[in-house]
Length: 350
Image (cartoon, rainbow, N blue to C red; front, top):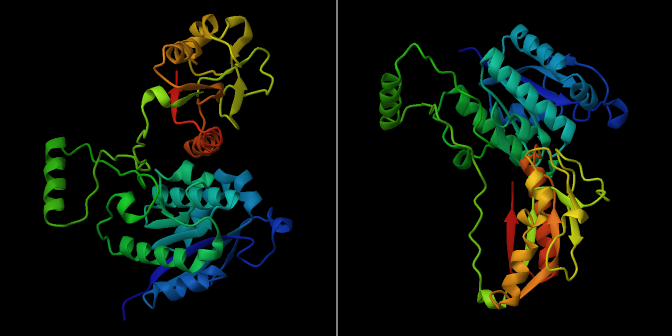
């Protein structure tokens, strides 16, 4: 009988049965057997696999000592001569997700063995590590553990067998997956021909130019003439009333704001300032309408080219704001736009 494929599984203190927040600061420990969800993973992987060690670490500890813990994980993976590393799944648990993403990326890059985890799209670990590791897509919570672990086991088996892994949108993982290593000693034309032949014969290959996976947004259709629409203004350029009354931060935004300009025909420079560090905002300070074109849309309304203008604008600072946070802003703004029966939006940027 051939030797079994050696697996290391990482879980947090909760899934290890050690407790919840009261034990979230425990350090790294190892059990040389499957633990918690590892029992399900063992069953799904089948007889060809053996979970030789379960690494356990508290959520607080790995979040506060990420680099140190990942180095320890890498050494444990080497010590147990693992063929496969599995983390989680972490679903939408923030600190656990950060640990799953960081550990999977570290093992992928440093040990260079197959490694996989699974997280919800809005988990912070997804955004940070989706282009450094395979992070499969999951639901928002652990109620779908069986389905998520089944996907992990099947994907892990494909990695071990060196099956062709295609685009994340088709394969069900976030981002572009782990970065590939390119042997630049081989001329580019030869590398390109080798990839083409591998693709033709259905063999495993990885493109050197990985395209990001973006969500497909359906194109909205305006169902009335422009002369009848209600228009609103939205900006990620950080325009706020003088004094920044809601203390909007200039980078890495935590929220968006909505400000009324009432029945004004224009925005006056003495009434506004900019909270945004990503561009030269001197021109906006000189004339706020260059960013939030109240003067232009009011003129269009008076000319009868549009029906109505919402007398408030929405604003945030886009610089360094994660995509998933921006998505939440968009959902919040969209909800308010619907309440105000807005038909169309002009979204201005920097």
